Image (cartoon, rainbow, N blue to C red; front, top):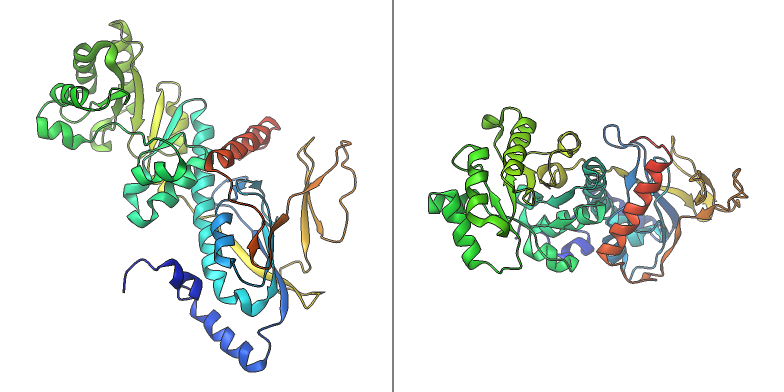
Length: 391
């Protein structure tokens, strides 16, 4: 048996929690597996001080339910949402999707967690570039998942070849320490790179392998001159000292000698706080573990209606709901699905956010391209923060 389950095994319910399998045994024996229900997914609390989440993973969610006798209404992929807002509802015979719950939540929780973390790093970076370097911190089977959601959340590029192909982008990266070690010298390694690699690839040199960053940066800049696009500092914590001061020193020495065109890229254990603190002294970031190991956005899926009657567990509001948002002022509301929103206090007209996504097991639209989802995320973030929202 392979460690990674196949799509067929997931769809068959082999990755479900055992209590769902036993639930189905009970329901079939009682003749209740065809009971029609409405279930909704919400988040009760975001990680840390997050003030919003980014919905991601709905394409996989719909793929899990494909061909089943269910209807799904959902927010669009890449939608910014708040706690206690239903992000999707599924309606149909409970037995049709009971054993899919574990997988349904799994694809959303991790994908949304990475996309949300990436959006926060994007915000912290300001206008500086952010590359996703996190694939090496997780199982390779997850590399495209990690990079796709980092990209839609706001990363400008990814380093893994397959991820970039999936996204329709070009993979981006510099060089590893191993290349410098094999050549025994940073300048020799960079000159060999320059002589070999496609000229269209930017010449960005890793300069912290063997010697002081300032002097290595100057040696490489003198050797490549205008061909050098940038340098990357991945200085380990044990040698780093004050990373900001090191970056400032390197920038000063390069500028003093006429190498203002050389960009500074920082990497190595950076999260949103470090990115925010360094963005004024660098031109870009390589961000890894804080994206690949991002805290999950924990959705819960609960039945809110049984055979057309509002019915939910304790602590849960019963009945199908709709989320309305005013495009003019950003005010949102959660109302019973049968209740119209009415005009907003600002004079705007709130629009429903849960829209038909699947009917009787058939998705109603093709998945949106990743770049289009990314643009949607960035637009919403811009408006969210422009309105003075915190988090």
